[in-house]
Length: 313
Image (tube, rainbow, N blue to C red):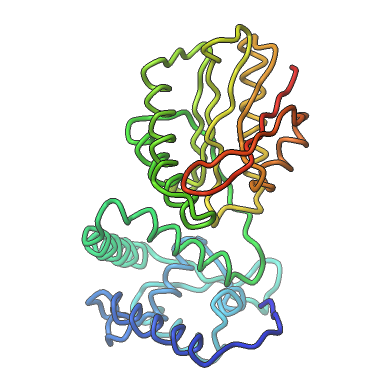
């Protein structure tokens, strides 16, 4: 586990422990049988490893779950007695036993897995739809921050589909309000951009990409034809969720935009941004954009310096 030397306040420790108590109670890990089953939480996790790996050694499972070898041995003995697991001597090392889940073990795991899915659905159904992205982003963020090493999870860049435009406007409004103090007039601007995109959409010249991982949206970007300048495209509404930053996602989104722009026959790409969005500037410079104009303005409730960037293709 990474270690960062810093002064942690007592209140921060208390808040961390309070969340742990809340969440363990919420998902029922304190009950003797997890998910109203005969298995404890640890036993369910061991069964999960066996079911998803197909076969493994006790050493591998103990390392993955940081379990005491003696404690794991007792669990595996119970599984063997119950017909959930069988052992086979390793052909490469006679000192090692390969653990193989049986058909009965797979059936038991399938039942537990379905119970867990139903429990998750019941909890998520209590969350207002507008708050669900925040909840899932927060959970991914906790996992990412507390992981022993950064996880570069795979992501996909897909075309837009129904529901995405509302998500784009909502997340842009929330993120820029949280990070830069912009008011709801920016959300109105984002709404205008996506409305214009949908109403004037030409698949030969326009495109929206949504970055996604495991069904969770992580960011977006738009490329649209310029309403006044022929052979010119506009790059719009680039954003990456905080939980996905550091994965190179912004660079990937811009790169996808430019590949499409060249294929669509555009000669140049232009964009409008703000001087304070320095992380985005780095991506634009790497892609070959150059800053061509700056102008101070008061928008979104704050004083800003607008910038126009251009790229000749």
